[in-house]
Length: 635
Image 1 (tube, rainbow, N blue to C red):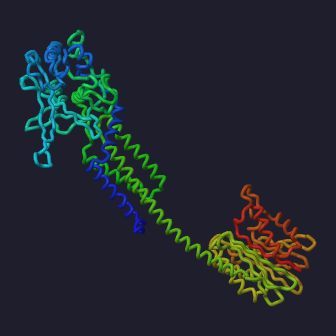
Image 2: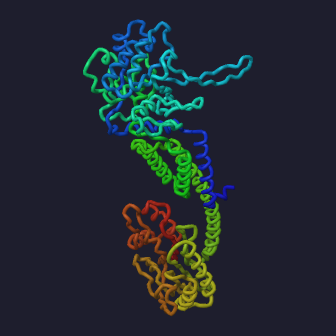
Image 3: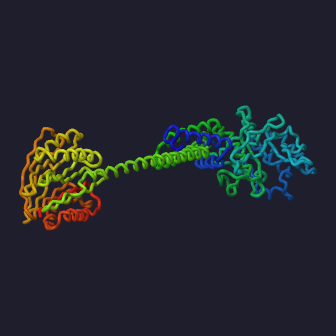
């Protein structure tokens, strides 16, 4: 099953499918709605003040007005009909265009004289009284079920209904009980009833009023008008002068604002008015803001569900393609960036009064989709890692076998020759290397020694060297001239080596009875000849390296070896071994010094001690290049 993840289309489908399902669930079951609303509240916080002046004046029944205007008993407020009639008369006389009460006149004292109030209504042009929709749960007798009943509560029948209009004061609340919305109205019993804000606006604008018979609630624009919401104390209307110009040609909305007595609601923006307490506002203030929103035609609504769902699907598609095959850090940066972008877009569109995005849902969709992408990318990477690890194990196993084979190509043991010590040592820097040394007993009287180095390292070098080794073993017994043998090998190497690949090669034949040493050097590092008396010589005669020049020729030379002489052959991995801290190489000078100091040592000891010397010099147990030496000492 996991192997299917190797197909990018499968991985894309595994990100897309859950993402689109998540979009459906978010909008079907209204997940993250509270987060949507809280981000909407952030947009309200940065929205600039409204450009227009307020067309509404709130007549506040505060504690001062209650104590100075109403004779005990103060409650219910609706029973003070004489004072309310005086307020209507004074507002009408001051030129108020509309007078609205956020007070229920449903339960009045039967002994109460309503004549002054009715008279005031007759004189006033446009008065709106409050009504409310009440939901009741009625239990069915003898059954465990109940039914819901909706009924309208209107002003008392003692107040002629022809003298006023009705405005519903119900407040739609969000799931967190915050008052962000208002109704246009409700259709009940085949009749349309305006909300109090819609009724005020419809009456105030008259024939210019827009169609306010929408069924969906609208979001209230809580940005205060340029001059703020105007307020006049109820007591000032009755007892003071100088306020008349404030209400002329405007809507006067009368309601209780005293803390503890008013119907208070949680506001998305705390501290909007002086009459607010904490993050709550009296209902009359919220109704005023709702009416202001309608007057400015500044209603804002949630992006339609179809468009919201489409936006969510497009977000899933974009996130899926962007996240596919990317590294964890890229996805984390993408997740952070897109979340900030969606959040900023939601806040900005609310602040600019364009629309309300389901920002919480879109953020959740972004995080969910990208998290799926991270999970699938991790699974894919893990699977690829396991596959690569398996392949590496196979390669490592093959390299171990190749190394064992290459080691067997080197002489298992050097022939024991009376009067001569010979020791060879090879340490490849990788599993297999491109160096080669050999010691060949030609006919009990002659001994061939050779050392070679293929340019480059690793498998390719080893393959060239294996061909060289095979050719040497075949040619050495019958070609007793080092220069002729080198020429023959050049033909072999030129056929198997690629462009830029070459071989340095040193070949010598020791005549055992006479200790004469006939050699040819094909571009190899010059073997060092340490005489028993401390003199140093180099075996450099020969010609170019093998491979690039098929028609090249080589010369050979002869030296006489004596008792106590040491012939040291090596590859450039010895002298080019360098310290990491300052890149200083061991070099030929240090090598010669080492050989002089160890001239009396056995050949095997010379090689072994050199390894430790180089490790101490480089401060590293491993070498950067193949290390190969072949030492011959005359006893």
